[in-house]
Length: 292
Image 1 (spheres, rainbow, N blue to C red):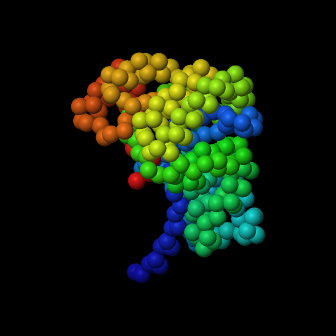
Image 2 (image 1 turned 135 degrees about the vertical axis):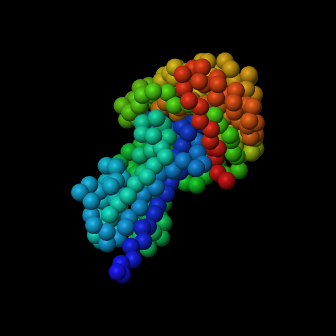
Image 3 (image 1 turned 120 degrees about the horizontal axis):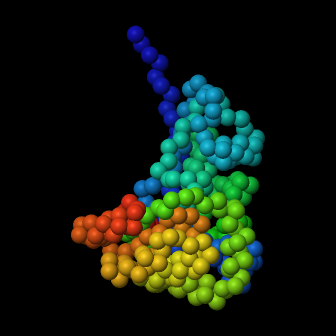
């Protein structure tokens, strides 16, 4: 018996983050916004597919924010999506600070750009995002200083720096929108400390100096501990030298905390880190941060 060939599925993908290397105010900027330097993670992504002609599911196959992004995108272009089915796969847990919802949205928009043959348009992506949520800069394939409320790129920081990481995810979920006002109030009390952290970070990127960037990330993480504390942060900080880590990173509005290394980890170091985090009651994960 001959079977009709299955229609091809068109995919869009987007990387997630391991929290941020910096989150705080932008000096001399509008203190109602929040500036980020997201920490992109290699190999952990959201993927959205559309199979034209396939039977529609009872549900869209998309998470609510991604479905809203598809609707806004099609309305913007005056288009209706042909019949078909959506599929979604993600390596990114929800609510822990890995930009899962933003990655879903961007992957959906990239899928639609490809399927409809529309050249990828960053302005349209940012317009859609601004209608849905405060976002990380996962729509870029490079580091960037970015205003998350206005979805404005302040400074592109390139792809030269890479880090190796060991991290844990603490229990719980953080509602980003619910803590925004608390963060903004705290930022107004510590402008000088945030200014020093951000200046050090930007200088490190300019000099392509990963150690300087790791140091600034630690400063930003310590400031975050004063407003949205992590249970393990003080212990992780106290043992940084034991493992020869160059710095610490966190998901400032999430549940991640971990070490930054500017060099690959030996098998012995990986074993020691796994045992250390297990002693704190957490499973250790390893990932590369940055871009290849």
